[in-house]
Image (tube, rainbow, N blue to C red; front, side, top):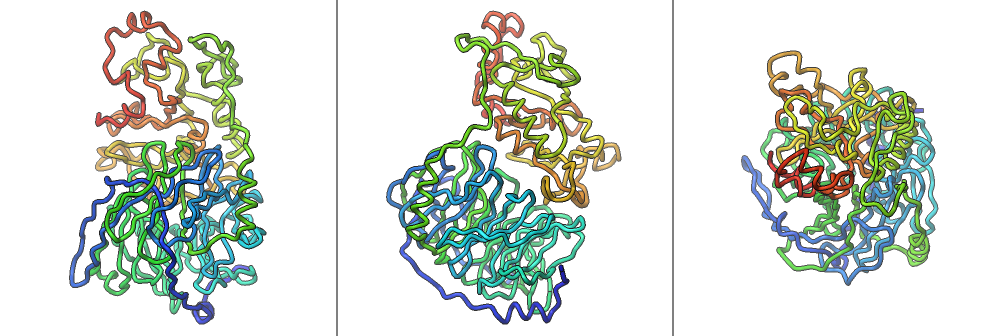
Length: 605
C-alpha cells in the first residue's frame, strides 16, 4: 500500500546510505571534434561564483545503424567505463551500451515494447530502467552479471525515470497517480514504497545526491520547468534555478556532489548549464549557473572531469563527451541517420565477458521494417495517386502518391493501436491539383500537389482530444501534437510534462491575442500519445508554422505533415509531372523550390 513519506522514514533511508568511494579509471572516449559548441560563457552574481571550465567536445557516437560494428580505438576523455542510453529506431526505444574502454557498441534490450531511462546502481550490479513491456509503464532491474531482468513495480499506473540511492538499496522515481505526476521512493526488493512529493503540479526527472541527503528534480509548480532540491533530512524544498522565462530539465549530480548539470531550452535547441550546489545561496539567487555549451540530458563521467550529453543536428543524433582539460582532436565514431538518442547514464562499470558475448550474438538479428512501400509500376519515373482506404467515408476521397501511401496506412494502424482512436480515418486534406485555390495568404507551392502531404483532423483539437506543445527552434515555431489516449488506465500513452499551448485563448483579447494564444496553467490530467514522434517513425515530418501564424489561423500549420525523404519540392513534383507541365502551371520557380525541404525550413523566412 502507498504511504506518504514521513520524516522518520526519510531518516531511515538516509541513515543506511553509504558514501560512494571516488574511483579514477583510465580515460577513454572517441569521436569527432565539434568546435561549434565550445563556447564557454560566464554568468554570475553576488559573492559566489563558479570555477572556469574549458570544455573539449568529442563525439562518442552518432546514432547507431541497424548493425553496429566496433569502431577505432577510443580517445582519452572522462575515465573509461560504460555509457548506457536509449535509441529510438524502427519505431521503438531500446537500451544500448557503449564501452569507453573498447569503443564497442552493444544493444542491451530488444523487447518489442519500449525500454528507456537506464540508471546504473552505484555498486555496479544492477541497471534500472523503465519499460511498458507488461502493457503499462513499470520499473525493471537487470542483474548485469547474468542479464536476468526483474520487474520491480506492478501498478497499472505510469512509473519511469529511476535514480539510485548511494547505497544501491533504494530508487526514487516518477509516478502518475490520481491525475498527478509525483515522486516516490521504493526499496529494491519492492517491499517499501513512500510518496516523496504531492504538489498538484507535475514533479519528475529525479536525481539522488551522492551523499544521499537530497533529491533534485524538475517541477512545474512555479508555472514553468524549474530544478528543485528536496531534503531527505526534513523535507525542505528549494528552487535552484529561478528562471521564469526558461525551462530546465534533466538535472544530474557531479560524482562528488559539488556541482549540478542540467539542460535548458527546447528539443533541438537546448544548452547545458553547470551550477555549484550551495543550497542556501541558490535560494537567494547568490549563485548563478555557468553556460557549458549546446546539448541536452547531461551525465557526469565517473571521475567528474567530463560530461556526456546528447547533441542533435537535423535528423542526426550524437552522444558527445566534453572534458575540462581543453581542446583535443579525436576519432570519428559510428555514422548513421537512423534513430534518436536519449537518457545517457555513465558508469565506471566494465561489462562482464559473458554478457558481451550474449549481446553480440543478439545484435546480428535483423528486425522487419515498420512498412514497405509497394509500387504499382517499378519501371516508371512517374507515380500515380492511390486512394486511401476508408478515409473520409470512402476509398478514393483522399489520395496520396504511390511512393508514400503504404507508410501512411501503416502509420494509421499504429496510431489506432497506440491511442485507441482511428485518428487518421479523417483528414482535412491530402492531394491537391496544380491549379488549386490556395488558402488566404498562401501560395500554390505545396507538397500536397505532389501527393506527399496530409492535413490531419482539426476536430480532435476542438473536442479536447489533442494538445499542442509549442517548440521554438532558431526563431521558427513548430508544434508537437499529443493525442489523448482512449484508455486512461495506464495501458496507453503517458502523462504530459510540458505546458500545452492554448490556441483558443486568441479570442480572449489582450496579450493572448497578439501572441497567438497562451500557455495553459497546468498540463491536463490525462494520458497522451506523442503523434509527432510516431509520425516521424514512418517518415512523416511536421511542418513549421508560417511567420504570420499569430494573426492567421491558416498559417499555424500544426495539422500539416509531409513525407519529403530529403527531396526538394521540385523533385517531388517530377514524380508526378513533366518539367513542361510544371512550368506551364507555375512559370519560373523560386530558387528555393530546388533545395531539399529541410534546408528550406531552416531559412529565416
